[in-house]
Length: 323
Image (cartoon, rainbow, N blue to C red; front, side, top):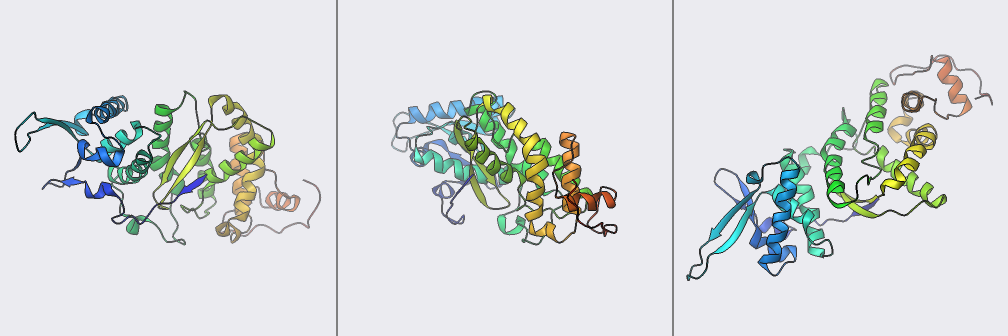
């Protein structure tokens, strides 16, 4: 996972300057005006991309008329009128997704409209208002982030990669939500900075290299609006999915996940509840307990197998080598 560096969001992009706004607050962009920043010199080439974007808009369940509007511009000095298309923010994003991936201008357009479209379409507040302070706790941080970002990544994979392609973000949604449920049951703090899918991605990449599994087939951009960053994530082919699922359920969840919780600063302050949540999540997801240090296992058993953050564990037995 690589972080894509973005300039200051205030006034950095040429797309801001090309934005039109009506008196009722409706915003739009001109496809012709977007030609240069999208890297196209001829309208015929730009129009082909616009039509592909319209097709994607329809197949995604949206009304084309809500995001694309054909217009004709009359030239001031006469001559043949020119065709243009007024596009919404989402429409411009779809054009960027369907543009020539080799053009650096298209990459810049994807980064801009990926962030701005999601905020506009989801009615998110500006970053200064929506990003919580590091110590601020969020009730359903992971599920909110999944619904706001991973759904767009799934759509992108469906449109641009072979059937069955996946990332560690799109392949672990159910598992992450179930882990989040356990953490909430244990009254553990959840923050946007707690990224189990990021941990899964790093551990999987290391494992894949160790056992010489096939290389990724490409990359995709994933916006994390609450962290104000865009990350570049690896895309894997469908042939790797069985190996990934097996590794997730036999290695990461029972063995790596407890270590991830253990090393989180916010979890270190709550005694055994992090280990308890990891153990319960592992049982729910794999049918087996997590792999925990012997003394932790004994402590959990003494506490009845579950310890909430606002409870002290029962009297702990002395450490033992028995697991």
